[in-house]
Image 1 (spheres, one colour):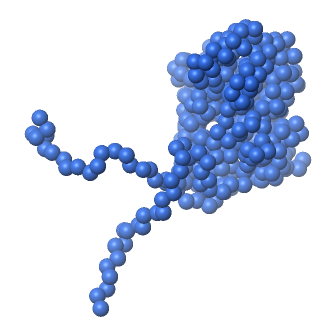
Image 2 (cartoon, rainbow, N blue to C red):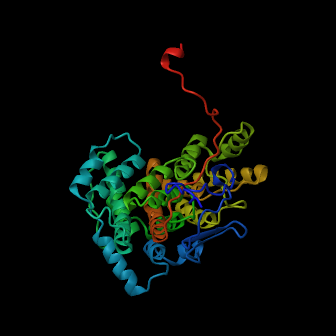
Image 3 (cartoon, rainbow, N blue to C red):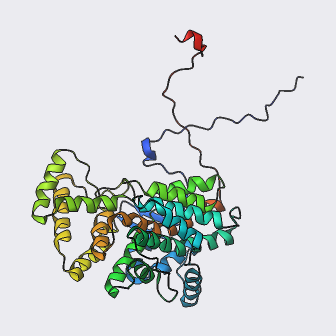
Amino acid sequence: MTQEYINPDYVAEPEKVNTKKGLEGSVIDTSSVSKVNPDTNSLIYRGYPVQDLAENCRFEEVAYLMYKGELPNRTQLSEFEGLERSYRDISKDNLGVIKALPKKCHPMDSIRTAVSFLGCEDERIWDATPATNYDKAIRLLAKIPTMVAADYRFKKGLDFIAPRKDMTLAENFFHMCFGKVPDAQVVKAFDVSLILYAEHSFNASTFTTRVVTSTESDIYSATVAGIGALKGPLHGGANEMVMHMMIEIADPLKAEQWMLDALAKKRKVMGFGHRVYKSGDSRVPTMKKYALKMADLSGNKKWMQMYESLEKVMAEKKKIYPNLDFPAGPAYYMMGFEIDFFTPIFVMARTTGWSAHIMEQAASNRIIRPLSEYVGATQRSVKPLSERG
């Protein structure tokens, strides 16, 4: 009887499952980090409704929840905050890299480069044990705000302001950017925005970080990849586009007609609609509440008047509702931030969700490698150059 030859390099072709373009509606893995429920318009982090977390917790508590799976008690929070605050400083070399970047480069390019450099400085680059990745995650949480604030100052021709260790993450960021901490209500509104932006299931940037992690690359590379994905205006960059749109409209009394014209011309209007939510983003009511507070505090009501008009027309004409970027854009603008720094602030928040997913992916890993359907030319022969005319 002849023994059948088995090719040791042979890999059976996987069963093919056709999915929609953009993986719309596809479930590719499990996760315990967060859940978007389109049926009830709810978003939960580790089981907790995000609106409840925003009202009852500080961002640091939510960061701990992302990493550990449970909200901290007082002792755990104190230890976590002590560690985060001890990591806020960045090296002189990293500061030099940020300062040397072209002044006109987008702040997302700056933070992408600074995080990449941070990875170069870490000698534990290939150590991906759970304890080391947790430590790296806290370092990213602590240092990214310092990097963003440094870039903010340098782009304005101002001196760097070192981080303080006696402030919350939100307070310290205002201190590093402006040299002072604003009214507590402004700090609360900013902190709420960080909580709302912290995590959102398998969005484009989070999925990107998991793909990179699945190759057994490091947490810094995965974070840099996430930043690259978040930069796009169809993802994180939308909050910037919202504010540019409002500035273009300029007058709240013109907002209704502007939207009607935009819809008639089939113009893309940023800040509306969502791949998952069909009846409105569950985070919007909370962020809108704090954006309205910012309007009251600043005395500048025109952006939220414009908001109401644009929202009303889009709902009546298209039954499409705002996503988180729509109230976040004007809220950040009223806090005094430059528009092109809105998305780096998003990075500050989302690094918590990214890190949680990176650690989850690493704990039960399989390389993410989908198939594609080839639609190019059929197999053909190669002619020598002399026969190609």
